[in-house]
Image 1 (cartoon, one colour):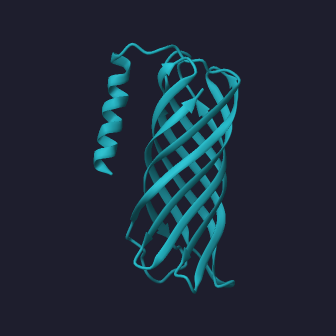
Image 2 (cartoon, rainbow, N blue to C red; image 1 turned 180 degrees about the horizontal axis):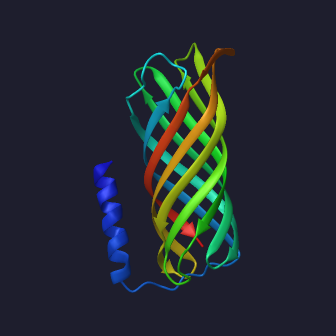
Length: 190
């Protein structure tokens, strides 16, 4: 995870030094990202602490439209998965996102969004499922290879609340609120 983050930082800082193609932010956009994710769980009603974070594979698919060269609005599906020790762990979120580009000519952007999240842990017999609300924020940088294609290093953070836990369909009466830090690289058609 540290190596990937270091590589993304180097690419982001080197990008202004290279000659980039001007962005073409208009109309429809599509982005597909893949990388690593660190998942933690916050349980406000639990008598125990859940301090351990799990590293797994994370990614997203985002599409939408351009409001202006500085603002894009879209729908994003994010996911995280980790299979180990006989457990399948999955988190999926669907959010409405806003991407704000401070400059019309540079690729740096801020992202904010909100929507729903679903977390599942299964062992082949039993399952623990939670659904709730999620907010997200992030940053990224479009490295334009042509006016209609970019490579986008990104960092996102998803924070959930009200993720009521059910064990085999029976409510546990507690919230297990996952939070997810994602670092990756996307292919973007701006």
